[in-house]
View (cartoon, rainbow, N blue to C red):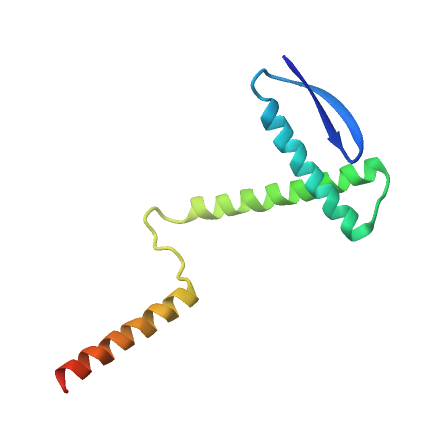
Length: 109
């Protein structure tokens, strides 16, 4: 079992993790730090426990939204066409129209 010391919001936390998982634990800690920095930017510095709760809620929100999206994707029938991208569809239609205009010009010089 490896020991990893993480620095979050100015405090050190030493945690154990399976050997080889140290970088994963550091990456997770960075996600917590990002959320704490976001919370600080919107409400200012607060107590350590409040910052950790706010970061946990932000991470839980991300997890909730990700699970919701996965459920939506799983509910779509296999092989169902993707939802159209309006901007892309508009560009393709314009290109098709232009190609038709060029072809018409070539047929009737």
